[in-house]
Length: 434
Image (cartoon, rainbow, N blue to C red; front, side, top):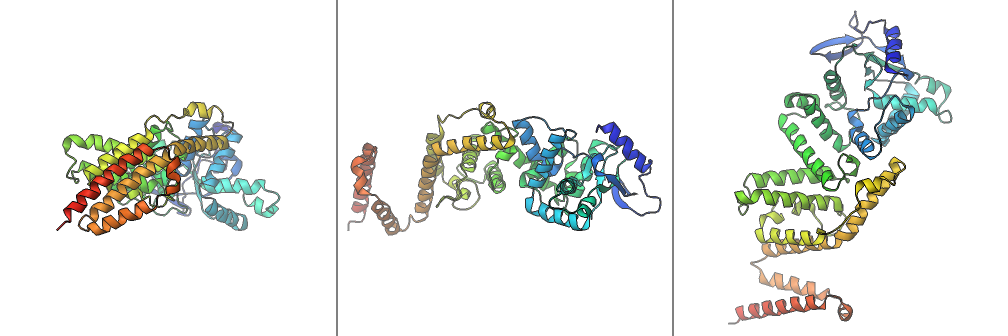
């Protein structure tokens, strides 16, 4: 059903009366005034999902980058949007679904004059799912989902006011179901792009301050840089689990470098250090190696005393090791990968395989470089305790499997390091002679 037909049928139900004459109904702050709207029960088939819903922005944008644009008026696309809404928080949605089946719709939604759902997309998608499931739900339960209780906005409602309402009711302090981390960053950027002031965004999203809005926007830039770095522009589903905390730490580390908080990073070195810091952090985020024993991302991007950035020689060696691990590593282009995709599931599998092939090529060397930098930092902390460092060195050397040395492929490198070790040993021995 097209927009004009939906608008006509909704107007027949409301007869143009949308504001309550007796103060009974749903109170909304609309266009700067608090108004009371009449609540109507609109046949659910007259409604369409809001494809720009903030709850599923990352999934929609990713799908459209990977495959094609989504039109909620097309049945197949509407089904895909409904699936995104369900996947956004499966556990909470199952709970809400049961409540709707048992009790009907408990919360009033908001729609435009032509049936686009402003608030209530998730609930409407669950009601549609219940209506279709004749095996699981009784006729009475399904009948409860035939109509959607909502208020209808004026015909002249503009895009900005609609976005404000959606933000206030779904992303503000009283949101009922939490969003995926990426959604709030995308939403803040969308609101800035549509002309909202930072203080308004802070209020509507329940952020508390404009400083938080600035942080969201700056971290959003880092997120886009990360995706651009691997040709994943616009594919927000390629962000690994736990990315938000990592990006926030990177943001804080960049600010520390910019603020001159690290003595050895002089003015002319700030930009190149930040470039290296970003690229290294991006690679370690993509590596997704937090389960690896001894790996702690905070040592790369943080403000604690163990950060590699705090020591010029440690950082320089770490950058060199990172370059050695990643330079020359080739990957199949995104377009070539997606050319083999036949569904959104295919795309996810193929892109994950691309990431894994990259990890297989770089992981060992990246983690070796990290371990060496970590050991150096730890040793620097013990520099006043030579016996501790010597004991640590002996412990490390004792871990060598000498039975495999005869077949080693890097004997020359081992001989070189043993030569250096012999020189250090002699220097230390001479230094402690009475």
